Image (tube, rainbow, N blue to C red; front, side, top):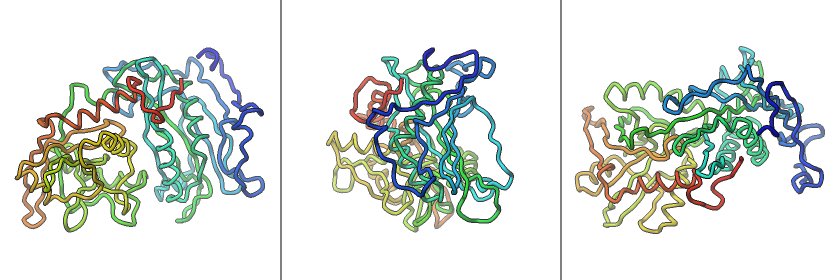
Length: 409
């Protein structure tokens, strides 16, 4: 670490690839003269935080998600005329935005959520970062924001993690949360393509999601509210997808529920739970053990990295049927009544899996609420638990899954 950063004074330097390296010999895509199509790791400028700018690290037992940030951040600007500028890592600081910036008026914004884990071998790993970056690029296209190169961004994020590696908790349950964000910044009122943008990355320690073991959640299921619709942007990680859910989440809390089970359509299809993908594990009407999650074919569902990983694991085990299709509330009611329901759980970066123990379903005909109990925690053997342990073992280096992690330090 001492060779990478000089502490006690501010140091500015560029990270450049040797001209003899294979990456250095890779030709850039053809672009307009003078316009940079992506930012490059070789152009990275790093400004080290001084001792006075560094913050004390909070104790592991008091970590609250999103409340603590590491000492450095990454940022790079873009404009329509010249393309991307040189990326920079510098001490964490406030952004300066014109009050007319498009992000503030038209929500031209997107973000990603990923993590770095300190393994049992003390090596720091990223979990499938290329999937986060590819999803971010797809969302950027849908948002009329600029594209960039996946590998160049991962290399810069890796350097950011290396610089602040002491912020990666020495723990086999906590991690360093990484939040890449891309916003439209041009100071012009009027709905239109952004001509200026900023990509920045924050990091900060995140505590163990389950401090005292799995805690099943209760869900409010009310088809009066929808999270997404066909042709919309539910399959993209945009901030505009989240703000409309806050009020419904508060309504759920007032009814003793921790999350919202988002339904869609006249037949009340299950789509997502809170900010997670939803999974159902049951005995289907043909008597087969089946794991079901909604499909990605109509734009309602966010293509979660954890979702994808669980499906890959389930299919590799080949122990039960795996389906990507919608399941309806009527089917859930029937499966519970016939004692075919085994487990229901959410899946996402923050928790890996989150068990569902109860659904408070509003009957759209009568307006009355019906309580449904899901036997997730009583299910034996517990598939959700197996998923959790398998993913955690990969993330913390206890198990090797080729291609699923990248060691950054």
